[in-house]
Image (cartoon, rainbow, N blue to C red; front, side, top):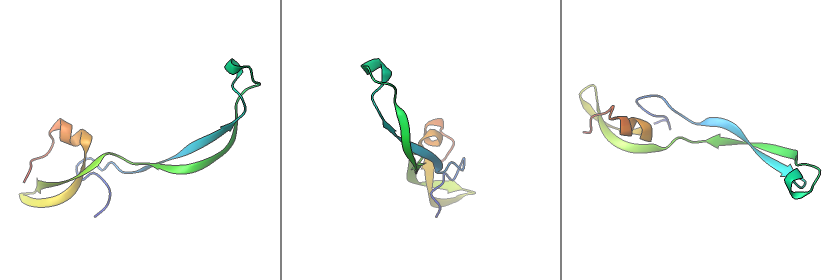
Length: 75
C-alpha cells in the first residue's frame, strides 16, 4: 500500500531546508547568507479510511482535501 491518496494521487514532494548564517540587515548586520541546505520531504495529510471502490470496501489512504470535498463513500 503506497503512501498516496487513492482518489487524487497526491504523494510526498521533495524540497530543501535552508540554514542561514549572519545577522540580518534590519538588525544591523551585513546580511544573512545561505550556508548549506539539505533535502527534506513535504508529506500530505493522509488518513487511513475504509471507502467503497467499485462497490467493494477497501482500506486506503485518502488526503484531507478529498475528505473535505466529499469525493468518497464510506464503507
